[in-house]
Image (cartoon, rainbow, N blue to C red):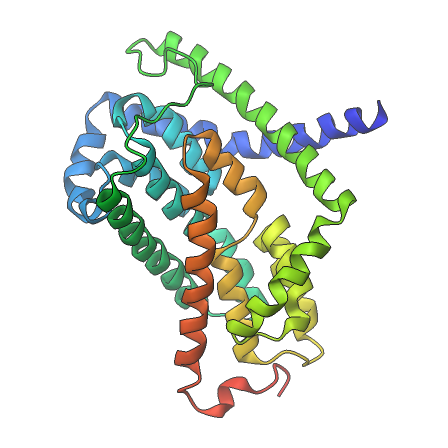
Length: 313
């Protein structure tokens, strides 16, 4: 009972912080959609999204995720879902792009504090999102898979109503569901920590680190970032870099990898709840992230050796 009480309190605090992001975005996107602004924005950014097979409205969703957080993208998706008419493949592409690049002002500020350039890592995240979006779209289109209509069964009716009272009621119900999802995710993360799955992931990551030209000793830090998020992983790297035991190149590669691939349990399950395919947003995205960072590591090897000097040198 004590655990359940603390779980509800922790989840409620997290939910309130998320609601402060989601509710304003829901209202803004609702106004844009109701008064025709979304169509105008769509005409402007629509052509850019055609290369990944997404409708113009999806640009509003990704923009919300980029400037706020992943939950900002969720809020925009919930508001626009009744009108976007996506199939599972398209939702998977959009979810992947949001997972690669979201919350840039906050998350990349943490990365910058840890020792990597803010603008370079922002560029890498957006580039990876677009490249993977194109690859995923081409594969899905070529094999004609994931073509069934997207269905978010837990979303209440009324989100596409022209009545503000009906929309407000439906939005409140959707926020209740978000709170329940947060509770479930918190329980899952507690279970991962108690069962030692995080240690198993560290062992699995060791050879992958070698492929990405990162020392295997950094696997525990990467595991924390993968499971808990960029904030925790970045914080540990800040502490590790102070003793000069990690080079600038390793620091940059590790931070770049965590920028592309972090909080994999929470964020992945959140996107699955929106109707995305787990193979596209987790397995495919993970393989792409490893290859992307491995290629980046080999590009950095072409630079002068001074790039790999210790942090405190």
